[in-house]
Length: 227
Image (cartoon, rainbow, N blue to C red; front, side, top):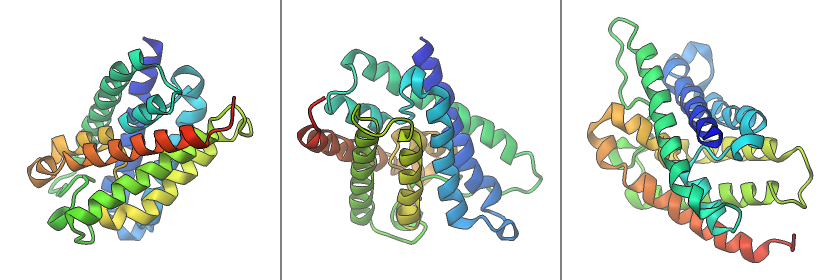
């Protein structure tokens, strides 16, 4: 139960910190945060939680991460579904808090509410195929970094930093394409509140990250040095 509560809190923080920076701060150009600031906000949520709850739950915060670690032989199958449920609920809680804050301003227009999308819902107008490729590839490399940085033979104490910086880089690459998911819980949390086209396109932001995570788990299991 402690692990599940930790995953709930961590995913809440990921959504509140990352999506919150996009909804509350990036909407005001005079604050100067922009896409780069949002990318770093997502990375910082992972870094901070990695050191806060990594020793409790492993700090997955992401169904794709849990699935990739399971495929890679680094996570127990009995914990997979409970982790995913906790992550989705945590993301929804984070989005609910963010929605409550954002709607406290008169005349506010939330738009996509930091949701993910393709076509007309893509920040740069990228197609479904571009979004699919982007999310699969970005999730693949995210899991490769996670599996490598948390390996017993990796340098101790730096895993959280490497993973957080990887997420920053992923956002810098893919925000224009999909607004960056690589995390089905994060995508679900925002789409529920944004509705419309974002909810209709949510399937891609479950399918693509899971495919990327499975491929990474298989590849890293082959590459991994003997423990």
